[in-house]
Length: 257
Image 1 (cartoon, helix red, strand yellow):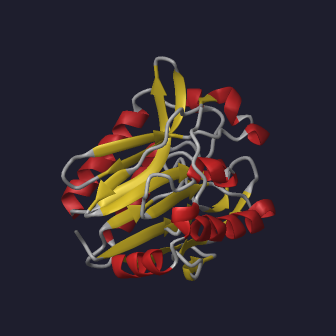
Image 2 (cartoon, one colour; image 1 turned 90 degrees about the horizontal axis):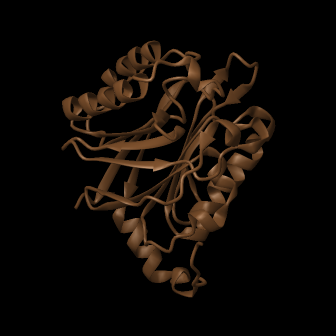
């Protein structure tokens, strides 16, 4: 088990519907990482931007990006997480991958597709949550619009860290800020949010606001510019406050249908 876990969140503009350019760009950024990073968080649909035209992409781009994640995770000896467009026989998915340096790979399909943008008409909705372990830490990954649905994120699995990857636009960024903090407090977990910045081909602006919050809702890191954010998660902090403030013992029991 790793007592302190070093996280890097990459906040950057994205090349529209251009996986090759995005892979090259992220390769350059990963090459500049500080020493000792354990886990790198990339935004939602980091290889394309939040496009509703996945049919424009070659069917092999999803697997190519996954292979790129695997190669970089192994070479850099760290975990890489983020979501990409992935095509299956039944349709397209907004799929989160967590690739570990030992070659292990976990996946989560976005549960709450963004109806306001018509994502529900283009992408298949996921049916199950994912909790995965890395270096003695337990992670629950979720994607963008999932942030608005606290029941789906509720910590009934005793995870340590929530990760949200997003393309969250400027007009509703206040909700992003408030809800990330709320998810940390109500679940007594670290909460990490990775958003993109810049403007996409549809004219939507993204202001960043990538951030991390501790189990008390204290903001650990925050940014509104293109940069890599670094933060360290402490197992001692997590266990100390969970033992002192046993709020999770009083959570409501329920089953998701």
